[in-house]
Image (cartoon, rainbow, N blue to C red):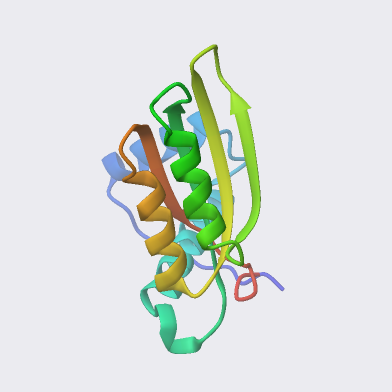
Length: 140
């Protein structure tokens, strides 16, 4: 069931929000606001981290030069050390030198963040990001 609510915004803020909605192709303001609320709920879920004891999920993106001295082996080694946390991985050859690796991690918040950060900080990784996500269990 949907509840109708109203908010008050400064004219300039609303205009900027409308431009953002247009760039992201939202059907309407309501859908954009729902996404912003969900994003904050996921942030809150992660801020509670270990307190509720539930599994968390995260996405790790890595771009690296596969010719870099034993880098692929180091990244694989980290993944094998935490094999229970790795739900899935995708390896894409971007060009003759660069690879994109995307991993889905699941487990205790502190453990998967630590693993993700160890992958990102591995010498030779050109770009890396750990994105906390949600199992969706608490979102509607």
